[in-house]
Length: 215
Length: 188
Image 1 (cartoon, rainbow over the protein chains, first blue to last red):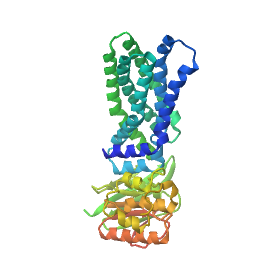
Image 2: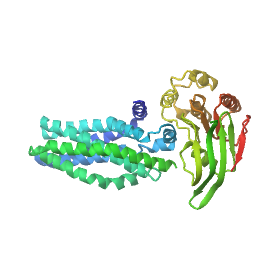
Image 3: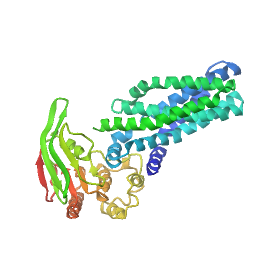
Image 4: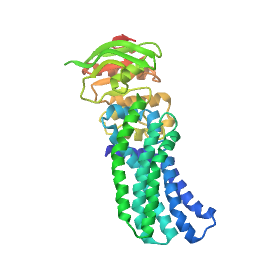
């Protein structure tokens, strides 16, 4: 719990780290309907593509220096020496980033969803999907950033971006499932299954990558 | 067992360039070992090996302590955008019973609400050194601990290290500034 407290303190005091991505997300969601001339029906159809892509890009932006600062100032070095369980620290760090950035984005995205579709019930179904998918995005991009820690984080995130394409396809299917009242809970369980595997494996892989960078 | 570190025939290569080879030493409790060598000879690499951060290309290194190792390296591991008080929380030193004493000794007690970025290099080094002064380790590994410190602070550091040696702790350090306490030397 102490690690989570420390990560909260670091992230909350660095307002550009969390406020920037949230503002960018809001701007994209506001700017999109203003920049295209479409009817309400067409807007509803294309809204979810913009929602997923905006969430993806904003999480990519948010995780840009998730490990870089700690690597440069020697904090990761101290973690590696003092704490035997580096993967737990990394998992906690990603969790805090999701809590401070991913959760607000999910809530804001849900509000925009209800505003666009004019259906509150749609919001109840889309919120859990957004919460789970942003957490998956956060983990995968953190892995990408760890890969290219000393070579500029954009390279690593670009490499990991294709890993998220299957997830984007599933998210598209979820919207279809919600629209036609099909197997929504099945897709949600599939996303939860992916998340449960990812949160176990990715912090462990990242800890090995970081130890290799420290060496 | 009285030994804290045992190293046998350590070698390290970067690409095809040999940094050092055949280094053997043993560090006993209550003893200090001064790693000496020119710039680029591998002193920092050797210290990082003892910490477990870097693996030797050849040789064996065993650290015989159950407690965490205290390492003061080139990087201070403090956050520039946080104030001194928040950094002490991150270092988990904010509730240490001796904290106030060392803040006063280093004249940092009135700078608690100042951001690290606004402190001098020497003051930042003193905050990083609080990790050493409030350590719970048996083994202290110091890489150029005096860089940026004034003469008075260097004397405080030496007095502290003498006390730690008397308490049976082991110290491995590298320093181009002379530290006046008994230590064995290892040239690389």
